[in-house]
Image (cartoon, rainbow over all chains, first blue to last red):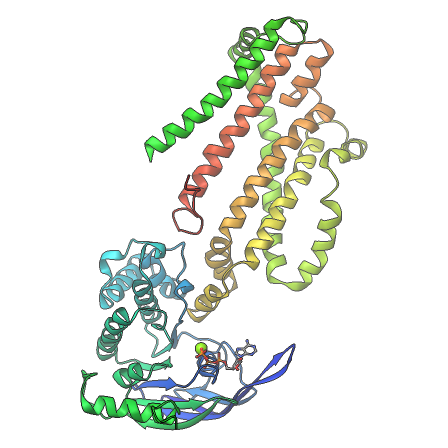
Length: 253
Length: 261
Ligand SMILES: Nc1ncnc2c1ncn2[C@@H]1O[C@H](COP(=O)(O)OP(=O)(O)OP(=O)(O)O)[C@@H](O)[C@H]1O
Ligand SMILES: [Mg+2]
């Protein structure tokens, strides 16, 4: 049985200007501990799809199943990391943010702070446990957000372009860190990006989407050993293939 | 930091000294009868006397009691109601027209009505304070709740927060810059209202009553020393209570910045 299954998902946004098709007939399945990237041009419905899997939006047609159970609303089997740095609670320290989910679960204070500190160590921020978010850089804030999503030990990690707003160098560091974190934790990860190199670096498999309305065009399995070398010929070949599928390669087709 | 604090204190002191010097010059010029415009020395003597015999403390305590009751009630009602308004459309639809209609009526205009209903005494004064303090608290909280970043609610929901946890651990701190502004405004209005209400509705205690009572006997020095105490208490609450509250919360969290220069 696949860990996550999307069955024929369709969603139409009701707006004052009329109905906007968000997604049509999206299906895919993934195994436990798989790292799946979703790539596609802006507006193809990547965030919409992730929000449906997270349970923030209910699709008009179709359903998501996680471990065989249909998704109804958000749940603690899934951790979510958003693109926006503002997702952290400014009134809580890094440690307080990471401990939030455990607090909601009713884990006693000493225990949840110990766990939260462990998660901060995983993203190499244990020395910043007592800092408030506004004293952390964008990259550090996103690392805290990852630690926060992992702290209550969900089986699934959902990430929507978490590094898109970072500079290229920091982003490279973050990708390496995330690959490490995934190797240690073995979560099932769905990672949305429009950066093809990022997808090839991180993913076991890449789902390519096209817009108007958002549909799955094809899937590409990345058969490269890890850790991956972004300068290797094979890496660049995968990148070219994805760009071709997205219609963005040099020849324009 | 400490040097900054000392400098701003010094600047404040300069203002006060200049104003006092002008007052003293006018008082000594002989344009007004000394009974109407006593010199600072006389006023301070009266103030000191009333402090030493404890009467000023009794009046201040009576006023503070009334203001804290009214202000406390205003927070107790305005804060939760403001949150409900921000979260639930029907509550907003019901409360907002009511608030818009009642808010422009000066609280003091209600005094005669309340006196007819309740008679002279603390109840009327507290009710007036509540009336004055309620709307700033209510409307600021309402704005604050609507300004809470939806991504915080989403993130908290994804981490299993129920409605109760959302209220205490996300909405209240998330709206805190507005809530603190509301507390501030609300207290200021309460403080202004309590003095007015005491002038008209208090029977024999309170800083406002002291002023009104002193008028009968042309005791300008008593009136002025009461005014000094009123200003002083207002200043101290504003700076110490709300200032430290801000420093301990929203400045520390980076949700608001102190003015740079
Ligand atoms: N809340 C909304 N109301 C109405 N339409 C929406 C809403 N959110 C998204 N859409 C529309 O749905 C489509 C898909 O949007 P979505 O945000 O999922 O795209 P995306 O692939 O995440 O884009 P990006 O890469 O820019 O983040 C777009 O055409 C968008 O205009
Ligand atoms: Mg998006």
